[in-house]
Image 1 (cartoon, rainbow, N blue to C red):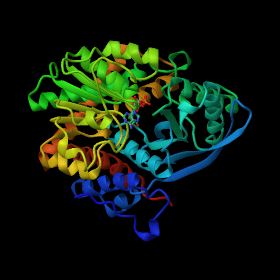
Image 2: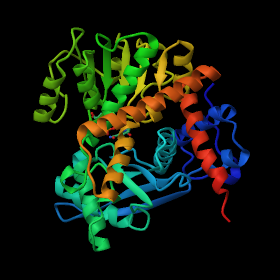
Image 3: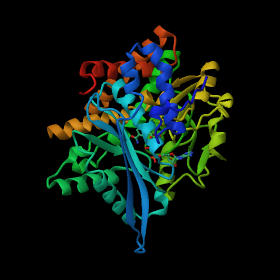
Length: 428
Ligand code: NAD
């Protein structure tokens, strides 16, 4: 059952928020199956470092506003840290700590030579102009100069950040270093060292594991009724890939709400609508539904690709999907997880399902370091190999130990980090 206990008193820290406690409870629930030492269990329970900063921004009207910024690094056991930067009103130390922890497991599960990090600024980008977002990004990057770097910590886009944000970060860092350092961030525009297929990678990876899960369930993806929550980088691309593969996308949503059409939505038309209007608001491709209603629609596959805490103890009992794929990080609470498991609904967990983004980010970093670039087919094929290999390992641990896919993904990931931590030991 759900367990959200605070850390032992001597370790109780400011990041002990509900989301971080949920990330740690997932870790603790998997430990009995991972067979690791107490030293490993204790060390990996906490992020290694956190940076908090107040970021001043000169608004277009000349006034100054201060924003809270964060960067948390969970583990450097496997290599430099890697993780997104999000701009969102709910960004906090605890949220970044939880997301950094999940990044460690995700990188380890995919066998990438990285640990996890996450950061962001507590802000609502919809209230800022492009010039203001640029100044905020450049100042935030300056505040991060001591902690980021191509061999220390490599940021990437996350909620409400994108290729342009990464271009400003890369440029600011390069200006400070006195030479061009494309490999300091991933998810950049291709013109400055970005990788082809990075933008599509997370959504495409989500659909790759969805296909794998369908195959294990004896289904064909084509014809399945799919609901996608979130229509941004992850959900928007996942919806397109599902559509292209013959699945029937019956509903999609963004923060403004969703549209539902049992006959199937024309996903390219929805993208055209969003490109013109900025969101799905007012879209009449189907009946309007709220985000709460969307999650409970009749369907076969639900792709949760918006944000954390969407499937909870309150709605898990009313979800109709038989397969849930976590495009977002942490969309399912511990309580919901237990209910879904009891109801026999298969959940492909975030650290596996949305790992396509960090995997192609790794390919981007490798290409930047080597100054040698691969083509789209090569990257898509390499991504498919990595996702399939991880899915197979997770599925076999789950079958062997009779545990959920989330627990088996965690077990596989923890073992990777544990092996390295045992070899390195605790310094000094
Ligand atoms: P994004 O900003 O591009 O898109 C987010 C989408 O979700 C938007 O359509 C937004 O309107 C919608 N949304 C936001 N709040 C919502 C709410 N309360 N209800 C319904 N919809 C809501 O962000 P993204 O990059 O697509 O990230 C989405 C999730 O995927 C996040 O959890 C992120 O951490 C995770 N993720 C992203 C990547 C990546 O490569 N971008 C990789 C791995 C995981």
